[in-house]
Structure formats: C-alpha cells, structure tokens
Amino acid sequence: MAIVNQVTKKIRMNLWDIVKFQISMHCNFNKISVSDLDLNCLTLLALSGEKEITDFCMIATKQKIFSSDQSVRNSLTKNEKKNLITKINKNRKRIKLNPDMNIQTSGNILLNYKCIRVDTEKEQTNS
Image (tube, rainbow, N blue to C red; front, side, top):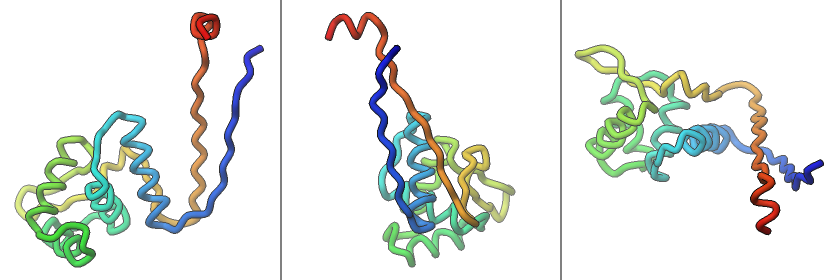
C-alpha cells in the first residue's frame, strides 16, 4: 500500500480573494498563463457580472487595475483569445467571464480541490 503525504489547509478568504483563487486554479489546471494584472481584471469582471465593454473599462481604470481604458481592452482581447471571457452582441459589445469556468461569486463558497501525485513503481525504485 502506498504512503501518501497529505496536506490539509483551511483558511477563510474574502470574496475578492476566493474568486481570484478560483480563476487562478482554473488557469493553472488548464495551463493558461495569465499575469497578476490580468487575474485582477478577470476577478473584477467576475464580480461585476456582464457589462458593456466601455463601462467595464472605466470601472477597471477607476479601481487602478490598469492605467488606461486601452490597457483594459488589450487585456480583455488577450483573455478572450484564451477563452476566459465571452463577448456578446456585435454593436454595443458586452463581456462576461466564460460561464464554462464555473466560478462562484455569491453566497457561501466552499472550494474542495483534491489533487494527487502518485509515484510509479519505476520512480520509487530509482529513489
């Protein structure tokens, strides 16, 4: 029988941090590279809900996530290509976090991730 080193951690997080953590884990599990600024932008979008792009750009610059509307737009375009954001409508475009990510943003939130790494027999004999 294999010995498993188990680590259990329980922490309480505020809403911003737990949403940011969920997005970070989604990106990590799917090998999607995002910067901390992009992560903050995605977290703000998740908490804001569906928004018109110009409104969201103003909110993101007021929150000092990016210094200009154009920087926000660049981040949104980059993250849309990574399938983290969906755009709706052709003329007055609206954006939202991709619902396939299943990011929880309201109510009580409990995240229960279980990740394992198992040694193969070959790795154990080489140790």
